[in-house]
Length: 289
Image (cartoon, rainbow, N blue to C red; front, side, top):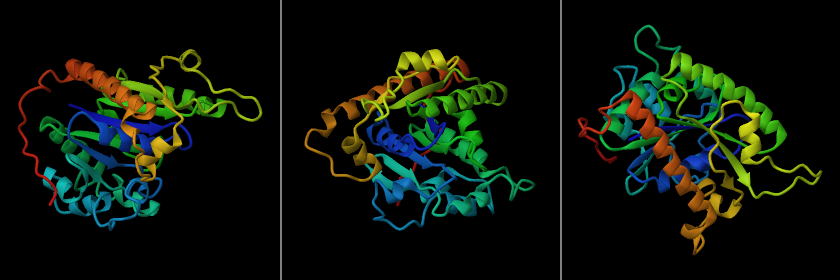
C-alpha cells in the first residue's frame, strides 16, 4: 500500500517515536526502516531498551550490496521482529558509518544503497508489506534522498514554537521544490505539528495553532497535531510499560488518525502514479528467521 517517510525540519520533535508508534499501530504488516544517518539507532536504545545485539541493519545491508544488488531476502535477513507482522531494520550504531552507506563508495559499480533499498521496499509494498521510514533531520549528509522522493507520503514533523516554524518554512519550501523537480510531485507532502497541549512557555510564548502554521507556511498541508503526552509517547520512544488504558489514550487515537490520513494521502498519490498498485502480490515475502 505505501512507503511513508517521516523527517524533521529542526531539532528532535519526535520523528523516531512517531515512526515506532505508526509501525506498531499500522493497519497492515509493516517494516520500520531507520534511515537517520546523523545518529545512532533510537529504536534499539529506546523502544527495545538495548535488549538485543545490534548485529543486523543498514550496515549489514551495505556489506551485502558489495557483491550484488540488494534483494528482498537481504532485507529480511537484516530485520528484527518488533511484534506480529512488525519488523525493524535498525539504523547505525555509530554516526561515522553514514559515509559508508552513501552513494559515493561504489557509484561506478552499483547504484547507491538508498536507491537499491527503495526498489526493495517497493517490492515489499506490492507483496502487502508497508514501509515506515525514519529519515531523521532533513539535510543530513548522505541521507536517504531516493527514499524521500519515492515515498507515497512524506511527513515533515515540527515543533510549534517560532524557531521551529522558521526552520519549517525554509525546509518545506526546499522539499517541495525537490519533490516536484526530482520526485513525482509534492502532493503527498504533509506537515505534522507535535506537542499540542504542551502549554505556554514560561516567558509567555504560546504554541502556534494549526491555522497559524497553515497561514504562515506557504502551501503547507497541515495534519491534526500529535498531543503532548510524554508517558503515552514514551511507550514507543523509551520502552515504557503501557498503562492500563493506553490503547484508549488521546495519543493512540491521534496516531490512528495520523495513520488514516497518511493512508489517504498515499492512496491518492498511487491512483495518480501507479494505477496497478492494487494488483495481486508478485514478490514473495519471507519472515525473518
